[in-house]
Image (cartoon, rainbow, N blue to C red; front, side, top):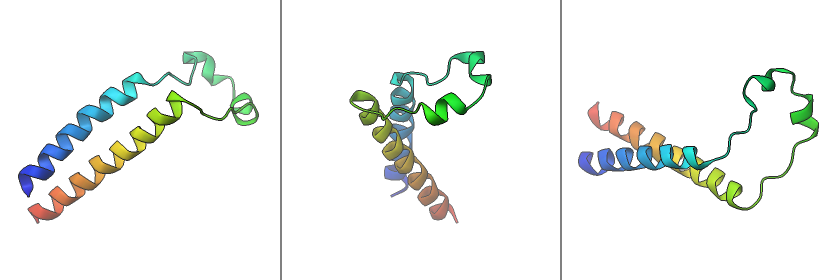
Length: 76
């Protein structure tokens, strides 16, 4: 069980890094310091590939977190 959870944690972390790097950046660097009004009122719905990558990121993050919690629980 320990080996399976360790492999799951490693694979999910690698896939999570890849999926995060595939996503477009949301900020314009230092120009993002001007304020949040444009982001709050000019918010667009996420569609297409961005939505798929966002959902994959959430699922992989949950898998990674749960596998690490289970690994910690097994060590106790």
